[in-house]
Length: 404
Image (cartoon, rainbow, N blue to C red):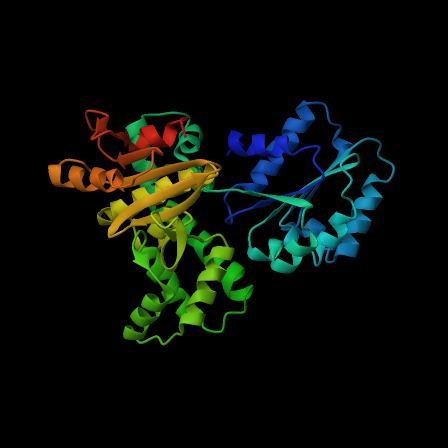
């Protein structure tokens, strides 16, 4: 499959050229980080950068298996660049495979001589020790699964309504587009299942030396099965105990952290709108990509409400928002999205077909006393586009809007 530009990330990468930072691309396995490096290399070559000024190291390739430590890496780069004039661009895929890689790269951090871009798929790349060592000398660019706009680009346009159904059914992992989405459903879910299994074993069980992998597996299934539901480590522990799996609250918290650190889930904290504070208890947990969830359980149309929330969350995260689940007295607001001085309150639902649903979704937002934008997003078209002064968006219109 030819490389397809993901403009939002390429612009972020290009905007950081010339800045004295190591550019660190993080994100889920197979989310497209390597392709972004290759696209940036192609762009630089089109702009006239000589090939000899580009060093590309793929640590998943046996060609670079000899680069075990930071000393190996530093010596290799030095040998390739010592006689090359001009600025050199260094690209390293899955850099965490090199022991103490940060020591080698920090010694090269001279923006007049080197530009450094690296990728990593698990928490080891920016563990607390490494982040402390690199403090102020790196910038993280998180790469997410495809947005709906990117999905349409990968599908080369097509009927928007049809592609929305595909997006809901298969999610946003770029690799699914090597398949025929109409005829190869089984192969697509097998591909996604393989990704999920690799993350489970390589990035979590092996990386964190999990002693109770069956408990981790049960937790993974629970969190994926309960997307969109308010939960807590204590309630999960109690549920698992009823299922015959004893687990402490601390163990559940640790395992959730491991899953989040491997970019497999996004944890959405609760926010007290009236008190303007984050709440310690309870949260919502969503898969990084709902297609991975479908690979585990199969596509279940009855779960559409949670899937739609998942789609909206991912869109907001890609756009740089911090996302919380709002609470106002006894009312629940699906999402409070914050970026800089901007706040948006959002309700997400499947349909607004009945007066009861309209009243519930719109009235909750009316109870919020400030003047920040408030919107309701649904999977059906709704006329008029406002109700009780609150705006409504048809889901694809929101996902493709440049307004937010």
